[in-house]
Image (cartoon, rainbow, N blue to C red; front, side, top):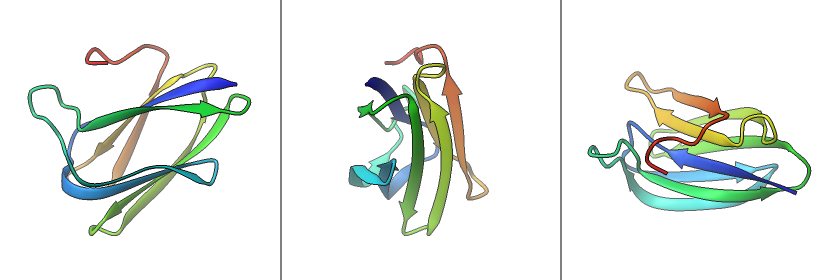
Length: 100
């Protein structure tokens, strides 16, 4: 079992955010808002069976949804941004974000 560290970062302005990992809901929170001092809205750690994780993000009421696959042994950190033009960006990383 490995751990995947997920952070919701830039661009969130009060939306409801749901995260699914390998098909199971791991996070559902209304009113997610980025703290402009840290560029972070929320974060969580998820235990993964094996190392591969399929991560899906749903943002409402914007009706946005995006998915990515992450190998948590190679990139144990996943940052998620909500971009101004209405897309979701994933930034997998080998290193911990500076604010965690």
